[in-house]
View (cartoon, rainbow, N blue to C red):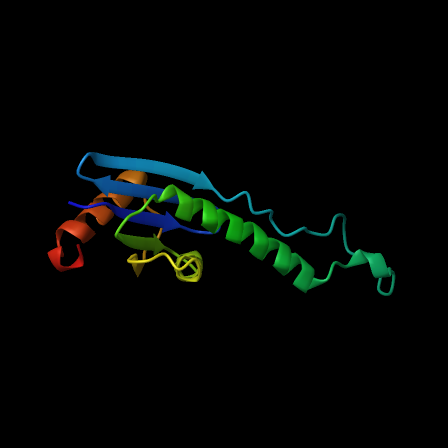
Amino acid sequence: MANKAGVWIDHKKAVVILISDQGEETKRLKSNVPRPARSAGGPRVKGSYTRNDFVAEDKLERKTTGHLNEFYDEVIASLGEPEAILILGPGEAKGELKKRIKNKKLRGLLAELETVDKMTDRQIAAKVREHFLSSPARG
């Protein structure tokens, strides 16, 4: 079997499974994306806000997007040079990673998406192995 990769990803972490003729390797990566800030304290009195009490939403979103793009680049770098990749995950992160791979113009990399809920590392490895072994046309 040639080099294949599977990634289970959400916005908090990624589990990368690399499969080659030499065997399997599992890597775990954390995103370190900061959580949105919450206001401290209790409810405020109506009209007691100052102009410095709010951070522009688009500024927070740009910052979060920047952190996520760094995370996706780290995940892509951990893949090495697979000929095919299966991207698994419960939410939007899998589509964002696929888009990032496409933007990087990685040649010959076939990326497939599949929506799954939380899985253990062993379940992810089994799913990736089954995906590539059950369909020889893919690789």
